[in-house]
Amino acid sequence: MPGRFQFGGTVVALHRSGLNPDFAVGSSVRPTGLENAAAALRYWERRQEVVANNLANVNTDGFKGERAFARLLDGNTPVVGTTTDLSNGSVNATGNPLDVAISGDGFFVVQTPKGERLSRGGSLAIDADRRIVDANGNQLQGVDAVPVGAKLIAIDAQGRVRADGKDIGRFRIETVPPGTNLQHEGGGQFSTTAARTEADMTRTKVRQGAIEGSNVSSLESMVDMIAVQRAYGAVQKSMAALDAVRGMASAELGKL
Image (cartoon, rainbow, N blue to C red):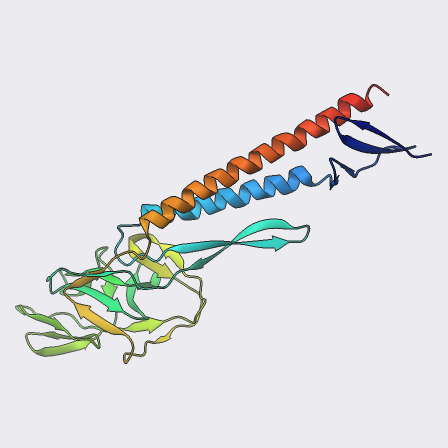
């Protein structure tokens, strides 16, 4: 016949075959308690990685922060989902004619060794082949080479580029669907498998002589980091408590 006994406030139910897999302190603790706690630790570790990456890019031109959120799988196991915050960063005037920023939706398209990537601009330059390139030497798409000897580069709000008054093209500026999760790459670039479309230039403007900063708030990120560390510590304590209960159960049951 099943029996029940109590130690340390923990009620344990016994069967002929041994310990019932459900035991509790006031309520039932499933045998997956430690596994769920371990999953929670992995969740908070991933949250910490996201926040740390945001903090590391507080001063990266055109950087878009990530936002982490929890999703529950079967068995109420938490996993991290992330989304890219596409809100605008602050635009700071520099006076440099080869500094560009975008206000509104949209990204410049640059050609890299890995293929086309998206960028929010920054400090541009003219390379040895007279191409307009980003800080990493990647060519901005949509614009021809700057004529030799040209001195005055003018970029209007629509992204059209003129060299000494000669039209040499218009920057390709594209958008992604709402909710698209962009993949961060080095050099302030982004990649995505989502379909891209031409930006609506009635709502998107290019600003010459300015650079867009990161949209990450260092203060908010520091607060997030502290919250993550506290939550991680709380889960560690929970794991220690669960382990202690199991150890107590094993020790007491061995006396029967």
